[in-house]
Length: 172
Image (tube, rainbow, N blue to C red; front, side, top):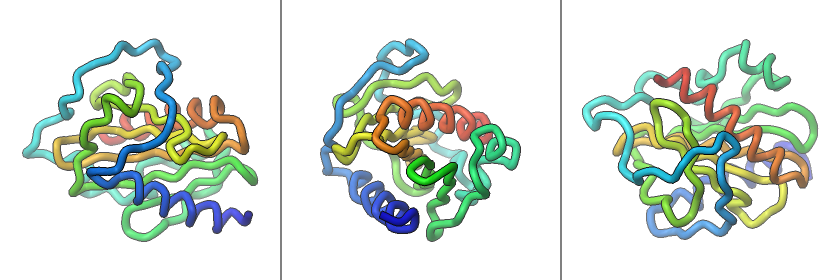
């Protein structure tokens, strides 16, 4: 499958699983950093949206791209940006400035991302090598970081969490 085909499929999958009534398939797993389960309440004040003024490809800096070994981010519509490392390894970041994350408590594992609550979704499409982190930025907004690492789900989850930490730092 071509990288563009992978990215398009991942975008469609991400958009599909972000619906309010969709239950995501996947296996919750504890965060690598030992985060304890927390509240499912939203992070941040409702009156301020941390995504305001951010374009999807601006949530990682050139320094971040170099750190991860990514090529420059490629915009995917108004809400997404795709970063590739090598064939079969990459990250898609989708901003949802007008949509809250919903209740992910039973579908995910909590991830400590500092200012924001994070939720790890291992194999959200039921495919080995895929992992997502949802960054709950406010009651009415969220960011989804979807990583793929060939067929290595653990590596994809590690990459998704590492990228989510950088994104959270930039949005704080």
